[in-house]
Image (cartoon, rainbow, N blue to C red; front, side, top):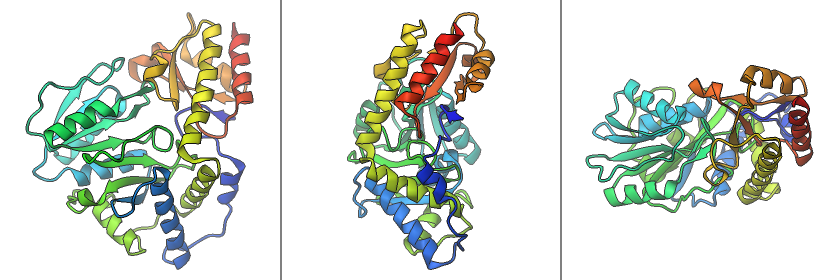
Length: 348
């Protein structure tokens, strides 16, 4: 079965075999060597200076990393401006409400780019979802970075579905942290996630949560330690996925691979009269959303494709009635996409 949903991904045999390594106690030096290598390789993904940035690992999904970032990096006296144009932007607002973080929501249409307020005042931080997989839109970080620079705000980015493929401007001084996960563009397995944090921002981290306390996790990992039992086998898979990522040419190669596969699918579906919901130039290469064919409910399309060995993804909320989503992450090939397109053609 090939997974064309936005994570978890279809694994390569190399990563799958890594799960069969010996059981390992998380208090032994071998585990800390594993943890150190993962953290170093995560920074190398975007060629980041370890004197400026650190990678903080945790056990949990990408949402755990986002929650840890939000709970730690907006101070007690801080106020957040949250940009929203999809489910995952809304999720950040829900986190803020649960933790009592002062915030204001800049809510836009799920079908439109982020709209920036004219002159926001009184905010210490801003948050945005880079790749909003609700629709497949890639939110442009440049105007948000410009606004944060002008207004003295630190920027927190949900990069869960973009890290490892899309460009992220880590050179922007206002960028304080990016949260992401193992089981999307890096092609690991669920269970490991991380925050790439600027050290100066992390030094001021608040402590609102226990298990997901970003500051404590960072301090202990710097000391070759860990506060709790991590998902050791998920870490095995992540380090192997990162080695494979580097062997295949790094982020630029992964971007090009996704872009080629995404365009192959777009062009092939267009020939069948099935068109994207968001223009390709505004979409991520990681995932695209498409209008459902006329008179075809999602469940019918999903089940027909699953019978042929493909798992696609529904729209969220009311969008389930109008669109479906296809991701090209993981161990999928041009030949796989040709077969997928043939399945679509045979439906008609």
